[in-house]
Image (cartoon, rainbow, N blue to C red; front, top):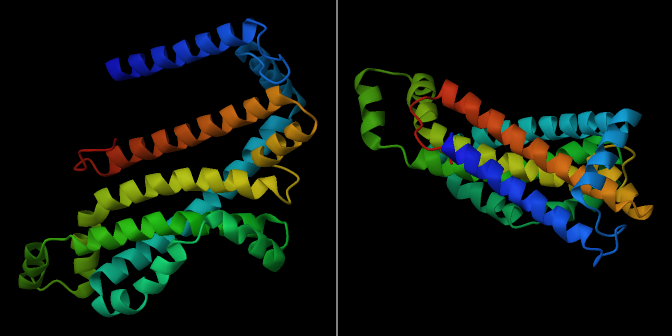
Length: 250
């Protein structure tokens, strides 16, 4: 509770400094609007219905990309972490792909899939996959062999061992990987909507830049940041409820 109060006080201090600096007249008010002007722009965007539409569009693109990337990352990471042959043959190729900047594949995806939602969702899934995959891989390899030997003593099948031992033991790693993936998902939904989009928060911000509405740009960026923070907060709360044995969530 005390930490939350400190965080709110820090945010209030930032807003106050922003207001004071923008009120001095030293900066062009169009280029550096104050928080009250940005708040007014946010209200106008809400009232027009545009902001709600863009939020919903970006959110569902982010959600499906995150779901696909995280699901595939968890499955392949756990599998490679327990099957040495797959790790030795497939993992090196994934490590090469992991070095690619996710943003760099967007032009290629646009050529393949067009400027619709598929290209955006695939780019998000690509970015999310690697932090989740590497976390799952490391978590699966870190399982104490005593746990696995105990499962064999009790005649557990490979499927039972995987579901009852491997997955629970790697939950802390998976939670960390998915939290990183959430951040990547919001970065990619923004970047993918900058090019070849007609809706979404990225499009809203890009269009605001074209028409020189810096207040709308800042409104879109702040909303995007708040959505990312809210998504991470909800994921942590759900994880704490579902996996109470995980002690650290950051």
